Image 1: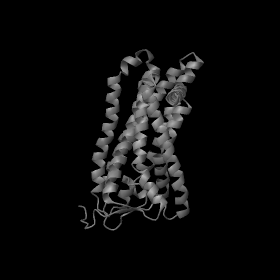
Image 2: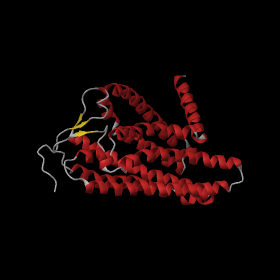
Image 3: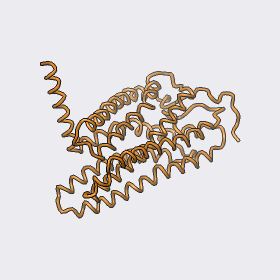
Image 4: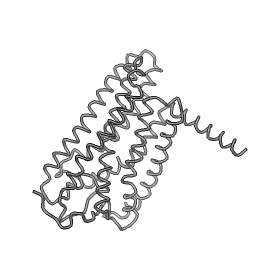
Length: 317
């Protein structure tokens, strides 16, 4: 049974890197710059995907979903992070922490499923090119997007209440930069074996299983591409696929390291840097990876830039 606490809804303290004030000052500007780049980069991806008819295909529909997801994901935690890094105030209200936890889990789990959907899309495009438009029709794409967002929401509504019901009588100081499950479990005043098991099961379902599916898909894709006689065709197929694989490894590599660790092995310092990576760095790199390695997106950006310039000149004239 849980211990009853009179201050169950008191504020939490996000310690973050408070033991290294000099590092916090550097991180404030680094995070701020990356956050601005995340907003600009992902908004550009969404805008280009909507405006350019040549990008009205499943791949870019899912990519725009990923960009929207990254925008929301970073915005759920980075503003609070900047407040903590920018001054001595490290507290976050119980309600603020709860909201952050719900949204953080929802969007994080959604990204796990969405990356699987994107891998399946690439598998169909490469391995079944003649049936691609028939299989990946708009209705199915919408259903897959709803599946991803819905699965993330169910995960959040399942794990967040179980975590927030834990008593935090003696310690409300979180050794993290955001309110996430491992940090809250770490400071609970009771035995959290049930919550650890729940987190491990959720991690296997949403991290390990999707990663196996993604790698299996790319194994089949590699075999199919190697059978293509055209060198140009191989380069094009590998070009779009390697971008997605890079995003997968950046996201899954850091999240898995945090969420598959039991409470007794949760490394404070390591956990904070890993969290910083997948909440700030990865969402910034995603649009860069897809644009720098994708001729279609670069072409769409050039066309959008020319159209915007022409419209501006016409308006001025």
